[in-house]
Amino acid sequence: MMDIDQKWYVKYTYILAALILTVYAMIMAKTILLPLLFALFFSILLSPFCGWLERYKVPRILSSLAAILVGLMFLIGIGFFFYNQMAAFVRDADMFVERLEELIESLDVFLTTWFAFEGEINLDRIVSEIIDLIRENTATLTRRITGAASTITAVLLVPIYMYLILLFRDLIKTFILKAFGKGISSNEEKVKSIIIKVKTLVQRYIAGLLMVIAILAVLNSIMLIIIGVDHAIFFGVFAAMLNVIPFVGPIMGSILPILYSLITMDSLIYPVIILLGFYIIQLFESNLFTPTIVGSQVSMNALATLLLIFIGAQIWGLAGMILFIPIGAILKVICDEVESLNHFGYLLGRETGDKSEERSALAKKVRQLRTKAVKMRKKKKDNSN
Image 1 (cartoon, one colour):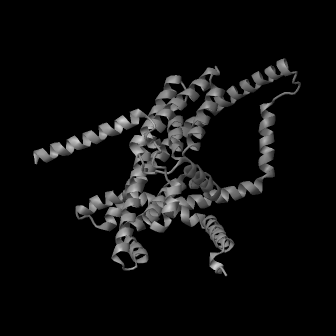
Image 2 (tube, rainbow, N blue to C red; image 1 turned 90 degrees about the vertical axis):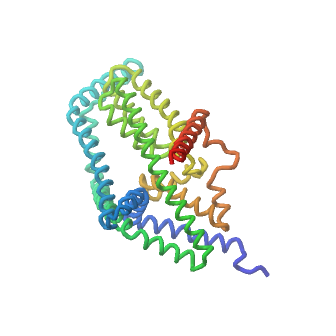
């Protein structure tokens, strides 16, 4: 008689129960896990800066604090930029409402002329309907505001967690070695290899992503300025920042400037030109910038990436869409290193013949030139020594 542990439905029940409990725990512990994961990733990114300071005899307490201050200054700069842009939006609110009223009147005339529409589209009526809707959903809005307050609290916890992770990073590394190495030298070497690979992956992925966002922000802003869109820099930076969400982010980032130009500009040709401009820039991003700068750090196939985005959105919302990509890449590194999990690493990764990393000859050429330049610099340095 087959042992009960070998029966497929018993294994299926265990796996399903484990998945349900894991997802439930992730949802319930959202306010703890989200700031902790963001702090962990940013700490890994800033750890080389701490190491550099410590080589010059700076105490770890001060080096960790200095790294946090650098990160906070960067975030404060971004926040100050968006605050100024939103203040400019408020100053243009009257013009925006007038233009919206003109468009509604034009739409009313069009519907009356071509479709014998006898009603009247009234902006004041639309506003009053929105106010009534808000009053009817006060309880829901209160819950949302409370959720936003808890989110702000979680954001404030991120620098505290970062400081503690940077301060006790050797302790955390030793704990991982003891927990998974179990005192066996071969296991400890494998765990060390995984730690190094995960650290390198996170650092290169986040740094590369920030570089791509900076390039896209410049290109988007220049394109919108040339077209003549108001608040072009804000729209350009906002669209570039949404690029952290693969597939979905670029579409979301282009919708806002297209709608704004549709309302504030005189011709329908402008939204079409903006859409075309974003499409061309996105082609450069997907075929040149990301393959060259970010490279194969997150070497997952498109199906796995898309599934991770939607699963992350269902569990943690927008934060999950951002976090689940590097989490999936880390899981792939672990699966590739652990022999019993190799099949899961294969499922997440690309096939050997998959050339999606080299989606354009230009990206391949740029990478080759960069490799040659690095080799020439190294050779010149060796000759000078």
